Amino acid sequence: MLTSLISYIFGLQCWPFAIPLQWFLSRYAWFSAVYIFCVGIFPWIHKAFYGIRFSIDNLWKHMAVWFVLHYPYIIVFFFNDDVHEGDDLAGNLFAISAYLFPPGWVPSFAMGIGAYFLFSHYRPHEHPEAWKWGVLTDALSVIFCLFFLLHGFEMRHLEVTKMVEQKESG
Image (tube, rainbow, N blue to C red; front, side):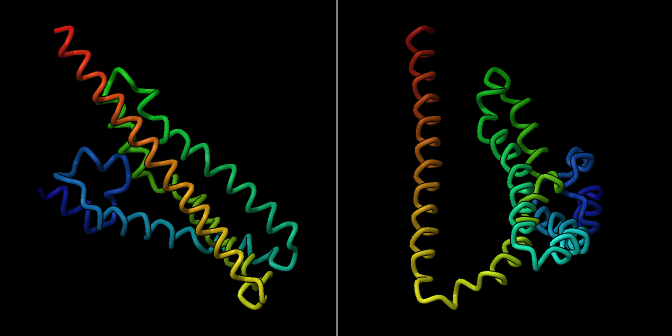
């Protein structure tokens, strides 16, 4: 319990070396630890975007780089069950340590900073047809939500099918 308290107080809960020393994982302490890390790296990422803020082409190039860095991380999570199909413990340990790892959140954080500079450049809220972008983002949100729900239902269906097959064979 003492090691857990030390981990929570110093914002270490999100780092893989601290996971075995903790009594339980606190979502609030984890978020705070990742947030502290992001605040710590903010000046360098902001400086990179700030230096190119007047060059829309360079802003988009930087966003593309962060996008490319972000999505392999997401894809690895998405297919974690398929990769560690036979070993639940290995899959769970990988998922928890990778998800908690702060550097994995850097591309997402950087894209948020880049989005600010793009928003400042285009000022979409000042255009009369800004509502179209709202409809587009809402539609994309619904599509992504449906995609993840369907993936979850598929995984649940596969688990139920495995349980039925095991009962029938055993």
